[in-house]
Length: 452
Ligand SMILES: Cc1cc2nc3c(=O)[nH]c(=O)nc-3n(C[C@H](O)[C@H](O)[C@H](O)COP(=O)(O)OP(=O)(O)OC[C@H]3O[C@@H](n4cnc5c(N)ncnc54)[C@H](O)[C@@H]3O)c2cc1C
Image (cartoon, rainbow, N blue to C red; front, side):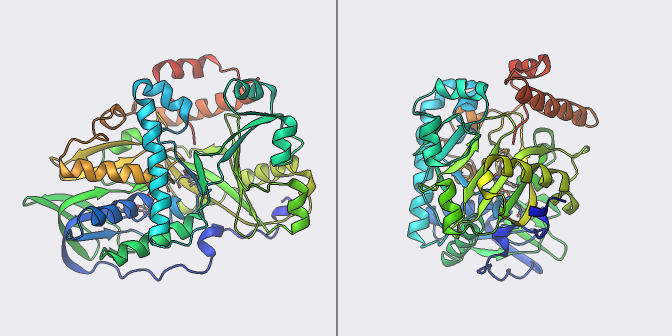
């Protein structure tokens, strides 16, 4: 094992911080609600919060299988992006006509998150630092040079000093940094302050029509609700059709010890942007409030058969690769140790951006498929779910992005074969000046892909 990883504990750093709320009691017995939200990640919490903001009289209950934010929402990189489409390029390739509107809606959504954080006094280190995209290979440099706001090698190294950087672009408006777990805890508290009720440690086992509404069954209880919002992310198994469109993909992260002022000065980073490199297999990294570096990405792992299992939260081979890449990127920090290592599941779909729909005659709505970029976009998705449940046609529900679905993945075992071939091809493209092989070009043509 790399010496820098020797003392790293196998837990998501964010969730180990002080301030985690005591979980709500499990559902035990029968209850009713106007709106039942299944899942207490960002998607469910935003849905519950905005349902109450839209109509304070509505009785809203959240039912969570574990504790709020234990899954992706409490363990991510905390890049809160304005993009609703997993990046501008991806959006342009899929929804060219509505991109100007989607860009505006995305920026409004990010403003809405900032305003909510301020309104409820959520202490989650939200800061609009923007994101620096860096090129570490000539082919990436050529791509970044084509866009606006290009920074040459000296300019980008004046921001963050790595000898691997050849150039970059600093998107100042399109991304904020946030402490992900504290955002969850703050949203949960805001929901409670408006009267949302919570049941935690209460997996919903099935949903059935009941009278004019739906009945949710848990091990020891049930809820009769007029409307249901399904916010179960990659973990959702309640609506079978979602399994055609979503695959669980694991993403891994390391966290360093806090950097001393001298060590931090050795890499600059005074503007504290989030950083991502421009490879297909990209790293993302950022500073925490106490000047640790979160370092994640690169490997996006699909376990054959699509199994979600707690044992997959740890993957030593990936941690070793990440630690090596960190050392190459910041040789100045060769003495820095990692304190935490973890992984988590993202809800990948073939178009990389969320999709939406209803079931049970419009009594249930879902939003899923954020593919590793849901910290900000889940708030937009929550608005879409509430619009869909209201039955009203809105600017959001009229979008092609909302009305259309991604191309489904083939069933297993073909699915595993296709995904592993795609992962291999993506790695090859990074080694081969970005050139995409025949397989990737074919997928590009039909609009199918694999990303994190
Ligand atoms: C390591 C990692 C790094 C990431 N980094 C970033 C990043 O920097 N920026 C970014 O934008 N995105 C990032 N993401 C993705 C982002 O975290 C997700 O898109 C987002 O959190 C999704 O929120 P969600 O509420 O849809 O899902 P989740 O947070 O997964 O929440 C779903 C919840 O539903 C619950 N649930 C499921 N089934 C049931 C059931 N039957 N009954 C009751 N409850 C149920 C689960 O227990 C879970 O709590 C990252 C993800 C990972 C794993």
